[in-house]
Image 1: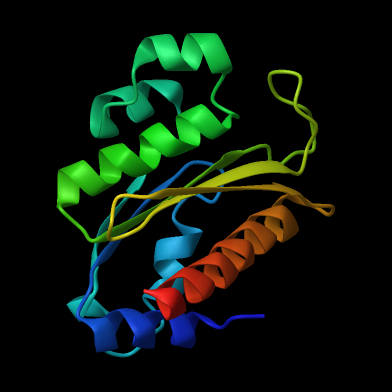
Image 2 (image 1 turned 45 degrees about the vertical axis):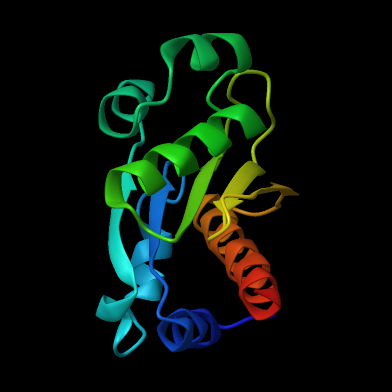
Length: 157
């Protein structure tokens, strides 16, 4: 399991920046990343877009995309990451959308999560998780999966 320090240090070493667009995690990723000393060199900012309206207004997720695929989808996760990256001009963007629970949403069971990462070459990486546990556990597991994915991707670039 990757640590937040690994991700932060890789970004700082590579002199690259990151942003996030968070729905179910409600800022937990950015808050976790902010624990790294010196992260201000890499963390450009973050968006908490919990409602569909804020996904549209703050980071430009097309309304039609939400209508067609629902907010809990790979398509919306990608649009969220693209919007955050565009707004901040960061090298990397990560987004989270899903169902923390306890109830399902849009026919998706609690624990379903989509994470999109757009790297410094504008390549899109989508991860889907199915996590068990209460709301906080699902949110924490989502952040951990993103840290694992980011460590892997940053190490390759």
